[in-house]
Image (cartoon, rainbow, N blue to C red; front, side, top):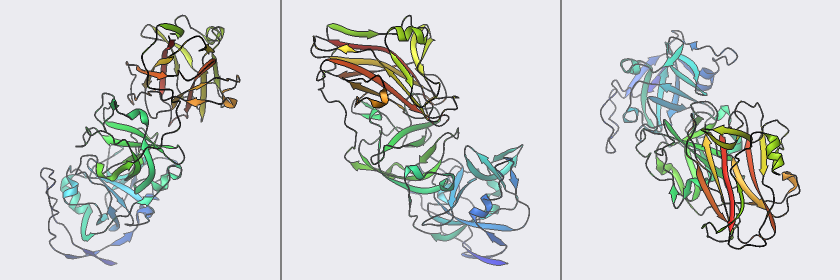
Length: 456
């Protein structure tokens, strides 16, 4: 059959990225193509997840239409277009790999395009379906010389209305769609006044910066992923709450859903923060002259030793994972991780022995944490003056701890310290550390050391 494509762009224009670049005028405004039309959903349906084999499209002169929802203008997408089937209320999206690093100059956000499938291949990489050219069992980008054979730009640029979505509703059906999540903010440890993180230029960032956000309504978390090659990687994260618009996809290791921005302007966090209620005794962080409690885990080589020092170390989700005494670079620490445990969820509590605050003043709690193989911030610190022996039945108060951000694919070497004023507490207190992970998507490794309480 014949269908009409309005506006064929015969050449892809190259050149440097420029904020002042204007999408070139179309030539040949009306082109008639003799071919068969399909849909993104039908294209994706050809892939057999049970085998994982690449699907090759034969020479059947078949095309599908899509709307561009990605932009490489800010460098956060690289040699790919992300397309969805409709500008509003989309139902399917897909990536096509193209060997051009300035695609936004021709295929701008909202542009309707036609994709010719003949000779392309469909594969599953990094958690999403991708179109490209098969090469030695992999999907690679369509060579620049062949892009015009497979991608035709229409004259239509439509407004893309982001799909409203809740974090709990993230699913494979929503991958490669342009979405909006409301009422979110960055984790507090990322946006402290004295320790603000950037989008993707901190020492832990190698290829992408992963920054955890949480819902003000439910406490659920999502990851904002930013390329270390983006031109806004050095900008500091906004401290307020609001909404985020971007492409929903999966991270490189296919462990988490992530949101990828076209530009930082799509992160509208201008509202006040919605932090939970923390213990608020004051702002004193000066360690006192009296040492009320000190544990650096020297000599702790087993759970038996930890028990003999009256610590509670318990997995309340029914699994075997606990904080484990570990020797790291000659230093004794406690380590916990959900990695490769096959446990989901993994809720582990480590609780100190009781510490009496009745004979001191100006008490300050300090401890050191280190994060490695970081894919989410999943540890919290609490305090109570009435530990029941069961962390699940104890009334805890959340502490404003300084949770570290670690590298995603290697071990960290540096600890981050927390110093917290606990002087408004009286009598006996217990400090509790809760690890709430899930293998494989929330499996960050944490090392804990040097827990001290001082006073005067």
